[in-house]
Image (cartoon, rainbow, N blue to C red):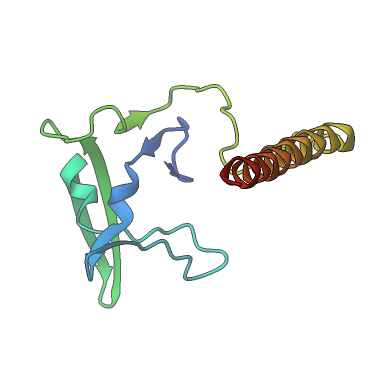
Length: 141
């Protein structure tokens, strides 16, 4: 999401993640950079203009001093219309996708019960094999 600090109406743009992606050596590479700690600028690739179009105005008030403004609109041919938004809708805070869920550890008594069950099965299997071998030995005599 991009928020414009110069706007007085709290408008923002929601862009698909592919806006920052390029294809490099058969893998998706995301390019998100913060060039200056106090910067409010974002560098976006050409994928941004798959979803939006901009009307840019360049102003040269003095030689060597240039300024540029842009009016951004959602494109009529936007590919990801579910993810593209320009406006000031207030959305509820969602769940943090980066929080690891706390594991539900198994109590030691449950672990012991499982191992005792496995051990009993192995002992019964061993007794069965020995009984079968002894049975074959005595029946062959």
